[in-house]
Length: 351
Image (cartoon, rainbow, N blue to C red; front, top):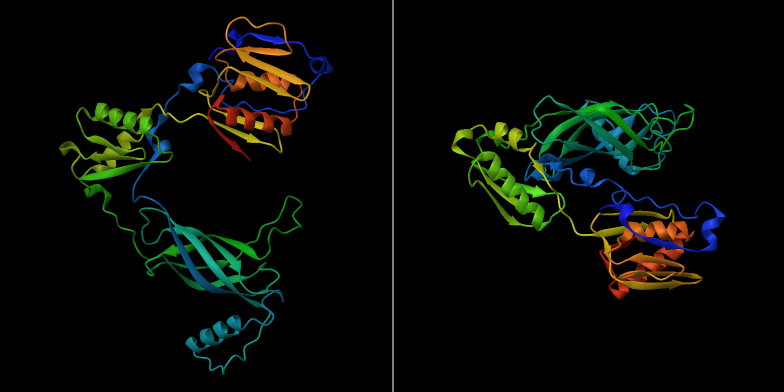
């Protein structure tokens, strides 16, 4: 798109007043065409189905707090009693009361192809009335996945962090433990032995899926990929890569693919920010909003407040509105009206 080739007729007193009140961010529309056409890598637009993170969760106790733990939570007392019992200390009922301990939920993300002995970070969140987890230590806590199997064990000092001044603490009832869990069970997918695998597009699109399948076939020199739908591409492992699926994926994930997407305009009314794609177009239409008048029409335009040639896109319109000092709330109303009349050839999302 050559922005300079568009013709503008501007005659409005607000233009002489100086800078516009609207801050418009045209992310793609103002980029050169060669930048817009740059393809993306397969690894950035799709993922292998089944190769993903899994969520782990567990219940634990943080001890060693300086009087900032749970004040009267029965769950904490029961947990401490059971812990003492396993350690050989006979404690009757719920007689354990301590403000130096807090009941917490521990969460973590189990990466794909995780192996026994690997370390992962964990998040510790208070579930009682503890005021702070600062200085506490998480006791040994098993972490389970959705299948109820234990995949990791967590333990370590909790850190709540601080802001730049080093004094104010951020969310003192939520803490992190870096490398605080050790993986105890392999996540075995046997990927290298796969005879076929499925690619799932991050943003489903029929054109992109078809292009991806064609690029894979070209890279492998045969018919090995099939686009099943807008978000799925099935790949058969060639005989040359038998038992070497990892090497095959390493070769394919850097394939350049021209990604396509439907035209869309995202408008943030609070900040006046506009984000759009290069293919957003406007049909011939006249706009009148307050003392503002804009026309998008065919042929030569007469001298009016503002006229844009036929085929003008949203970047042209936004620059014109920006030059006239249109407020964000007015811009929202204009775009909503354009969408309702069918003049805006794009999906409109207002934040």
